[in-house]
Length: 283
Image (tube, rainbow, N blue to C red; front, top):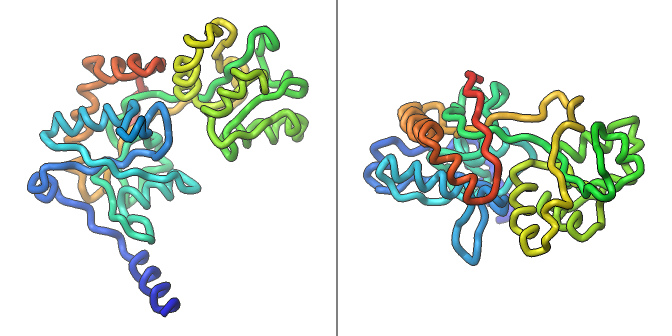
């Protein structure tokens, strides 16, 4: 029986799940939107209610298209390619189907293939460093982390970059946390002198706690120390299955209008996160 079930799973995973047509979506009255699970400030549960920047963006897109939003909660896999496969064009091998579109996808030619179209860039994200200004008054490069502890999310780009820099001389001072949010909490608790991670997550967490702690001016966010990194910033966009390009055009039109009229920037302000416009160059 175990072998039979394993064979069934293998056979099911060999065939992509059919994405819904526009007619199917219209008939159902809802649109399924893939968002990352436990990823504040973009998509997370707040007292049992979906919350976050991408949740509000998805809700607004659905409203503009005349549908109710249904959330397709996605657990991050090993790569963006894996996430696109699981959420947009094929589905996870354990089942669950696919979403009609996915938010928070890098607008990059590396993720444009025969299965997926990436459309409608709506934000620029970047890596940055926040530091305790008392312990680290200046940070023009990363050499001080040979002597000061820096927190990172485990297996993130900052983790990989910092642990391999200077022939591995920073390794002992790179402190790992399950998330960037927890690393920022450690900074607040003076367990580390700095945190390297996504600017949006760092700003959101500092904004959520600094007011109560009265320590907002004790921390400075800047990416000037990352000048040697080949890619400090990237545009964020939306992914749809390539065979559903009509839906992709509708979603891209909706989010572009929201960027142009300032609605997207307003949602970012609500979460105390800086908004940076995308370049909108074709991937």
